Amino acid sequence: MDFDFSDDQLALREAVQRWVDKGFGFERRHAIAKAGGATRAVWDELAGLGLTGLAIDPDHGGLGFGPVEAMVVNEELGRGLVNAPYVHAALVAPALLAAAPAALQSAWLPRIAEGSALVVLAHQERRARWRLDHVGTRAVRNGEGWTLSGTKGVVPAGDEADAFVVTARIAGADGDRAGIGMFLVEAAAVQRHGLPTHDGARIADITLDAAPAALIAEDGIELLEHAVDIGLAGLAAEAAGVMDRLVAMTADYLNTRRQFGVPIASFQALRHRIADVKMQLELARSMSYYATLKLGDAAPARRRAVAQARVQLGQSMRFVGQQCVQLHGGIAVTDEYAGSHYFKRLTALEFVFGDSLHHLGEVSARMEDTAGVFV
Image (cartoon, rainbow, N blue to C red; front, side, top):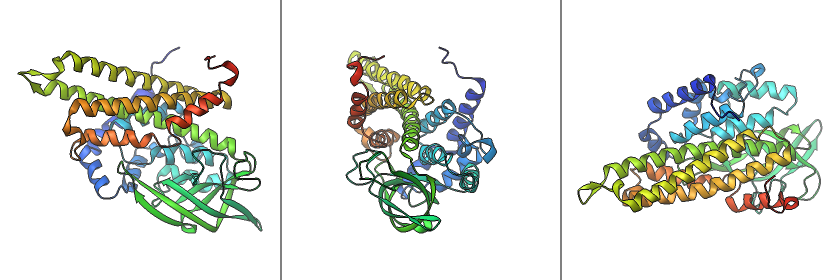
């Protein structure tokens, strides 16, 4: 199998690298986080690069690129610790809207592609424990339209978004797979309570009280699962980029910091530790590739592959983050040092679309017939 990137993919990587190096240094990222994490201006700049339309069909003004190009972009945004809901707004939401009626696609996808609209998925609810089929928000048909009532939590950039893709139950009990609809709800129709996050971004809780909604799909669980897998693969690539930069910073520090008249990188114990860190980074990068390349497979194989990748990413993020902090010493936990912010981002990524324990259960549930043997 050929894992070399094409010339177009390499050019895309270089374009994102140049923007990160010139337009998004750590000082800017730190200032955004200290100011509360609002990132609409960053989203506008990504739109100027054409990245907000990366995964959108050219018929709607996008570039029509695939999962590998999305992975390349997310790696570079991760290395730069770019504070923007890129995975949620440029990959997950367009994947959901691509299944909407033609009129709804035409109304929103071109706006997302040009950067004038920020649309994110709102699906998490209390007591769901990351189960996608646990939906308590209710959808009621109202004439030719629909109204939704319920509460969604931890919505990325929820107080900045222009609209939300919302899961709501049309029929059945809260945990049934059947009867889950996908709807688009404009921000003006909901109540929002925004909060800053641990890693300097923003989330919001949203409340829907008979909010008018446009139907995307009446049976949306498989559509939701596919979009979440796209999100997980994108976040895996971002995490690989975050870890790559943090490991490079740590290696530079070991080569610069001196004790007993020599760089501490010459100490054998530290060399062994950074080698273990590098191994975890490469395991994570390999599984990020694996998840990306499996996005086009049938649902059972895709879901298992993405869950497997997410388990490895969780292990690697924890190990790399903790070891790099320890190898730096006290400076690594200061707010003024970039390393602490990379560690925060790795910590926050553990809880997006499910933690490692949740995905370990997903892997287990999908390997019962093989007794845990990879086939």
